[in-house]
Length: 78
View 1 (cartoon, helix red, strand yellow):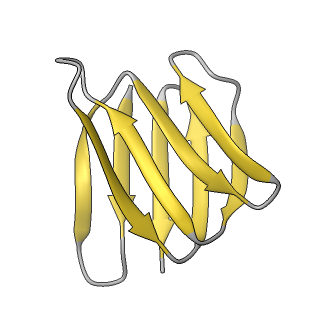
View 2 (cartoon, rainbow, N blue to C red; view 1 turned 30 degrees about the horizontal axis):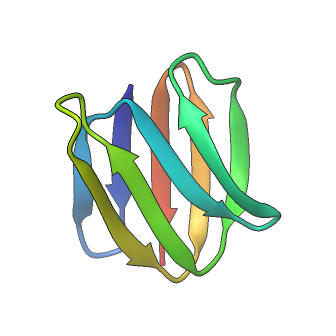
């Protein structure tokens, strides 16, 4: 899967991941390979992802939107 995290100023992250956990408006949710397409509002919290080598990374967000489609997770953050 490909994760793209974009702010108004720059691309925060773009790369291959095995899972992504996002702070959705109705609670956090995890996206894995071949996840159903969706669009979600994001709230204050952390975007956490696991890279193919097993490394786990996270960074805080104050809100945004996430789009999942065809193994691409696009996250636009505030």
